[in-house]
Image 1 (tube, one colour):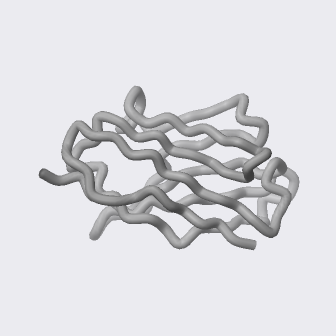
Image 2 (cartoon, rainbow, N blue to C red; image 1 turned 120 degrees about the vertical axis):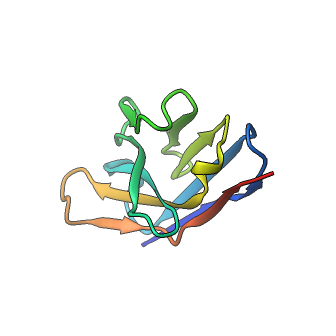
Length: 118
């Protein structure tokens, strides 16, 4: 089982980034997908989630209207489109997969760094 995030980097305030998370080794379309982030000296927080069919999404109040989660089950990939980025969005962003049928099947990616700074 692997989850590989990509797309992080350094961006100026007000800019945009799109994160991707490619899954392999498990039935991707059976899994609800989530993006978390963790800033230095802070707890990991849930940023956005999407159900296995892509029909239902949710996001944290701090990113509503700026971040959009989506998925392509054919490509086994979940995305996080981030716009109007702020310095407080700086964090390591992690992809998480949770089996819809067996929630004990819970996998994490290695994370990708997003830094918002001028």
